Length: 260
Ligand SMILES: NC(=O)C1=CN([C@@H]2O[C@H](COP(=O)(O)OP(=O)(O)OC[C@H]3O[C@@H](n4cnc5c(N)ncnc54)[C@H](OP(=O)(O)O)[C@@H]3O)[C@@H](O)[C@H]2O)C=CC1
Ligand SMILES: O=C(O)C1=N[C@H](C(=O)O)C[C@H](O)C1
Image (cartoon, rainbow, N blue to C red; front, side):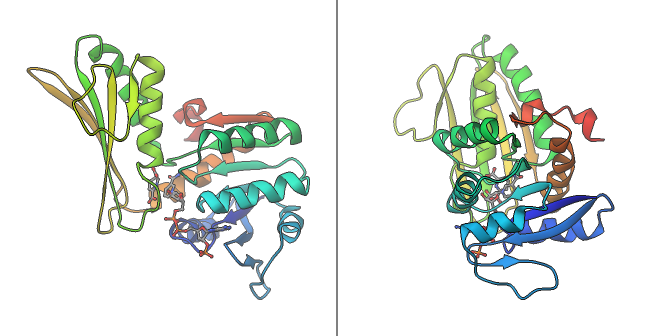
């Protein structure tokens, strides 16, 4: 059995993942953490120090993080300062800047951790990314403009979404465009604009639009619940365990056929 730790235990995603973990025959919930509490089965939830957290993680095989920037920073600092033995990580938290991601990458190399940055754990989004790259490679040289629009629930704290930035960056790996998230004036020729809507209880919608002079193509993904993110997180938790230690991975490294 693979033992799993849930950082962001009390959150919307934490609770969704917990429900699926309870039914999974290969993964076992070892414990969790939120802003102020350590949650260990059979014990009263308790306050904790970074050292307590790392001690509790000792037995864990995979740490799944769905918290926020401060929460991700907290578990990073605890693992770095208190020298956690090699583990596997799935980082579902979004909004991390380049500095934070680089610090995790360094820690992986130093400590022998395996880590996957997964700003969207839906397998459909992975396919959306791959298809968007292919469409961009054909349509951008033909003069089509590419823009991304995303919608999420009113309580989401980061904007644009991690997924929208991921889609934009992966498209820009293939075509020579610059991501713009704060356009105020006219569109520049080499821009890929990213725009966010917030409201209601939208689980997550992303649309990549390819806008030409006489026709328009689009590829879109709509989450119908949080279950798909939780299911994907558990599949990816199994996937990351099989990867090489001391390495970090991104969603483009994941072959959908390996998850079936
Ligand atoms: N990869 C993916 O597919 C998806 C990613 N996400 C991302 O996952 C993250 C969580 O989303 P969601 O569940 O909706 O958010 P919530 O706000 O519902 O939950 C956040 C959780 O993080 C905890 N937390 C906050 N600060 C800290 C801290 N300093 N230390 C430890 N834990 C902390 C909160 O604890 P407390 O309850 O004590 O405040 C809470 O349990 C977001 O970044 C979101 O964008 C969301 C959906 C899918
Ligand atoms: O906060 C959310 O809810 C979601 N966040 C992720 C993101 O920022 O892309 C993934 C998903 O769309 C839901």
